[in-house]
Image (cartoon, rainbow, N blue to C red; front, side, top):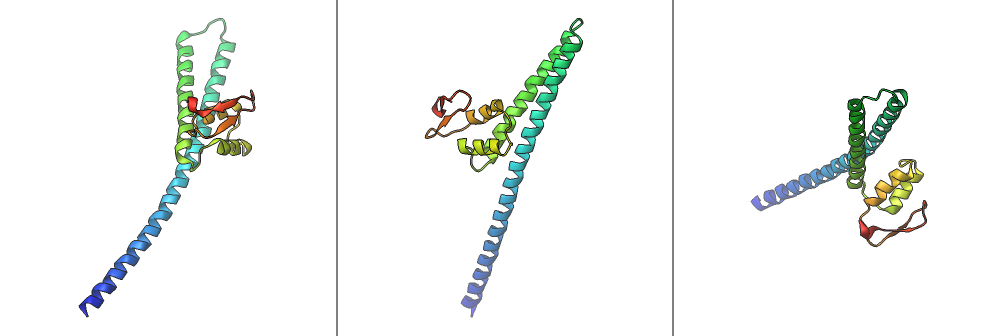
Length: 149
């Protein structure tokens, strides 16, 4: 009788463990999706931030040609550098969070308008880690060898 109870108890513990594993797998997938979504949101916000800073700097230079304050110009330049660093980091976050980060994925994201310029696409392609794939760049029709990165 006691071995029967121990057996039932073991089965019960096993079923609870299995149920918990299924639950954890589901939670992990949700967390991965959230991280992926947040990486793309960060990419778009960093892109907007950098663009706004650059437009502000250009407007300042245009409107104050005769009386440029070097301190303001320095702060705008530093803001541009910070924005570009945040932008590059957002692309690295996408690289980490996407299940597949290769040239085909980048082409797909470009078609889906997630990546909207060749300059941005270059930042993505520079982060591809795949020495078996060559990438044909449409801008200059030269093969992109990833082993040089």
